[in-house]
Image (cartoon, rainbow, N blue to C red; front, side, top):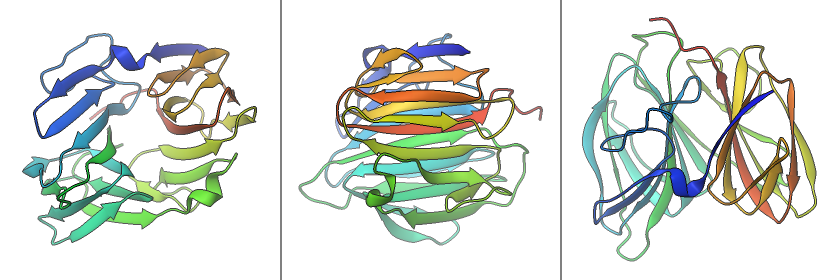
Length: 241
């Protein structure tokens, strides 16, 4: 088993006035050659958007983009004609493929929005752009894994992506032990602590810490307090475009 740990305080940080953002991996003006990606997981941004502010229309291509609101709601608009809110409990997936443009805006006049945005390298370039979103019931992840994302040919209730990748989330009560079983040979798992304190693969981790684990069939978690964890399973080998 191999591991890499990224402590919360070692993430990149920027405050743009309207946007308070932390980067687990190198992004925009923050560069760390030791934190470029974890396998096919390229971006894990933890963003807080001020009321009545947001990201203007901007382009993407050849990337699988997953957004997970943790608090509040964002209004999404894109060049495929979608215009809808994504809120706490929702997960949004976009396959940028041959190219799309989108914007995300906090319509609230009083409440901030906190959301995660993750980028995953696709298994191939030039796919047709697509968009999907789904609401997930938090009661279905109490001390168990709830699937949020799956491969396009995989089984389960998660939204699909153009990669052999999975995302699961769990809400653990203090003292709970839970195992994560890797779905595919050659995949690794990046665990991101949303809330609380957890021991993963024997390592003590706290809120907003992350740990990547690979060359392993399963990983053990023990909740040192009530905790929430996101697990992102991706191929460790980058796609050969």
